[in-house]
Amino acid sequence: MNPLRRPAWSPYVAGALLGIVIACSMALWGHRLSGAGAWQHLSGYLGRILVPDSLYWRAIVPTGITWDVWVIVGGVLGAFAASSLAGTFRIRTMPDRQWTDVFGPSRTKRFILAFLGSMLTEIAGGIAGGCTASLAVSGGAALVPAAFLFMAGMFAGGIPTAWLIYRRR
Image (cartoon, rainbow, N blue to C red; front, side, top):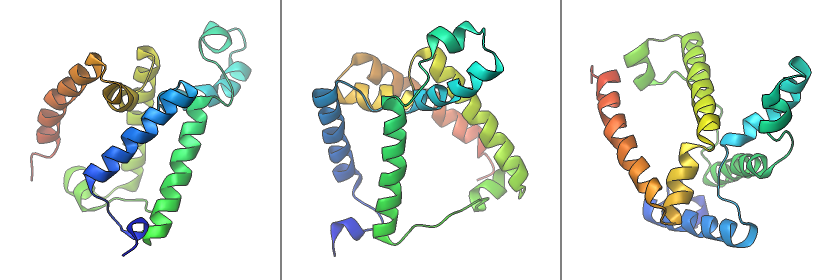
């Protein structure tokens, strides 16, 4: 079978290829893989219209098509290409069984929680100066000690949180 048509890849192969992509990105363009800033950079257009005197939109967040925006565009196009080649592309609105077991069948509730969660994550990424994925993946690929400390903390907090949320299972 053609490896590009497999619905799932070995995590070892995918991880090694991601490491190569990150190394090339840092070596050739001097940028890590990060998408957290993309939404802020794009939202700056609306922010400058709604609050034209805001120091945040004028000086802190660079509005425009930045490296982070291109990373998001590439990620979406790459995911579409990979799922199309594997024959697994489909549009889903959830909720799936895991969601309904924990939170109930409401799609409205799902979208509200997803929106609030992503909004809080974006705000936290902006305050921290980058996203968690960038720190863990790009920082880990560059062997930055903070990346490994972060990942240890993420698992130390994430595992008990998952147990708490999915306690019914």
